[in-house]
Image 1 (tube, helix red, strand yellow):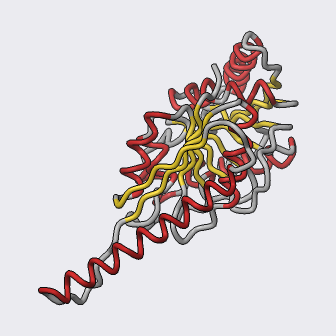
Image 2 (cartoon, rainbow, N blue to C red; image 1 turned 90 degrees about the vertical axis):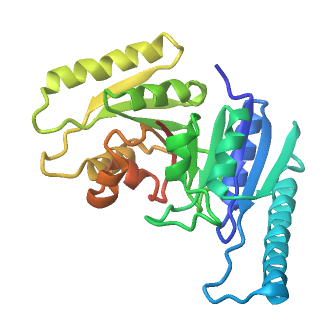
Length: 277
């Protein structure tokens, strides 16, 4: 398995430099084609008029959106100019998430970025929370401060769920390029630690048969400590530049209200995160 096509989702009113840098680097590493996508919708103001004045307002608003999308295309092409390989741009006057999700059919991996607010503007932003749930592709979330894709030390946040199994399989091309891979599970209070360790060891052995040497680990964090906090400590201990995880093992509503590992991963700003659902 490899990544033959990388798709990067750009957004209005957000920094795009980091995701462009990482997406271009990813395409170079795997000699992949790269597709840049962006979409936005004009939002009429709450106060409105009618007739020719209304049409003029709509026309001006849509022209502004098209101009800003053209600016994103120029930014994409400038970022990919010296990368080599095939680069393609796709944009539309559409809801960003809907458009990006449709285009994801052409890609092996989708690159997004920036902090995703709890409630985002669906007219101008394809939230990573929506992309990971519906794209059917792994999503690489890149912090705005990232300058490169650091694969020296990769942390796999394991939980024996379908989402985590997909994430590890989706990450195989990157894991093969990593210098060190650590698989960690954060047990719940009722879990049998020996059984948890046996499961993580199974995953390490599976990766070994795919050419990836990995270390199995069970978090030693206090039982009252939140899983996200424990994961952050382990990531810091191993110097992880990338975290691999399954997304939304619990419902999105539960994570939105109570918090959770996925909620933490799509909003933290220190490391890139590969998520699968």
